[in-house]
Length: 338
Ligand SMILES: Nc1ncnc2c1ncn2[C@@H]1O[C@H](COP(=O)(O)OP(=O)(O)OP(=O)(O)O)[C@@H](O)[C@H]1O
Image 1 (tube, rainbow, N blue to C red):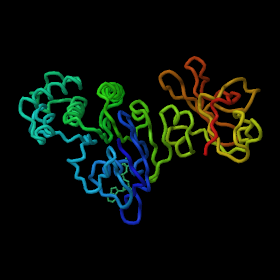
Image 2: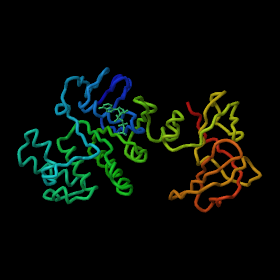
Image 3: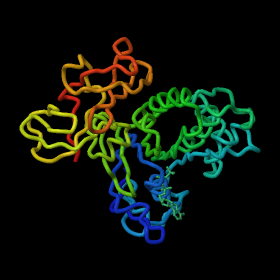
Image 4: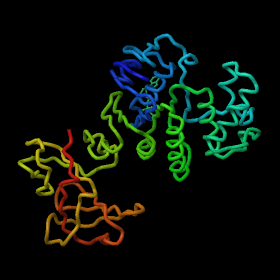
């Protein structure tokens, strides 16, 4: 469906997008994730035709899009500040793309009703957009983007301005809706929770390049680099020397899975693999703090030497602040980073 071949966009001397190659298959939901300034929005603007490229090609269904203007690309856009037309009612907003394409009034009305049903706002066509809640406005913006039946829907921080609870609900609804409609989606977000909940595949960007691409599970289980690991919020990273199935670190010996590359490496221990026990066993640590995270407690540990560690503990087992514990590591939660 969408193919980017070695796309580069420069602003002055700096490449905002640096030789990026990416494919999005029909019906696939791809989320581009990365810190501020990593080039996500620029990438989206390139696909939309809002940003010329300095090198490389963009193909949609095999056709090179060089010189094809935005309105002829057949892509739907929903941007962060969703810019609804305040002077039009909900129906007027949703019908916008249909009107531009010259659909009859009857066609427009039928399609608007269908779309409002789809996004969970049945019968809202006559309402003023200013009178809608943030979540409702977001749904109207989505209905507007979907109305002309775009072959590719592009979302830029689609839920960026909503509060967390609403975002978590909407993201599940969006995924179900796209699945039902078979919509192909390229979305951009800096919120990893949103990306992981929405996407079939996540693409992590860093400084205009792709740092990792894979299913949410692959990226979560096996971050490709220290950058990706830290971006995902994993901070238990340490230098190591691997010999056989053991890594020597400043935290002591950490088991690694058989077949791990030997020699110097950076090691990630996911918090679930940091086991707390009797202070006599393993690495002696003091509990520095605890943060409740719903179904578990993130326990911050200070070892005698080396960086702090985080452990994920069930609520009832979490040790008190100031307690001294012995830490051991579970090999299946240890990742050798590239
Ligand atoms: N029109 C422009 N002129 C000059 N520099 C630009 C322009 N647009 C983007 N940039 C620069 O290109 C880089 C990538 O920007 P981009 O907006 O694509 O990043 P982003 O990952 O979407 O960031 P954010 O999450 O903050 O929106 C940044 O360094 C930005 O300052």
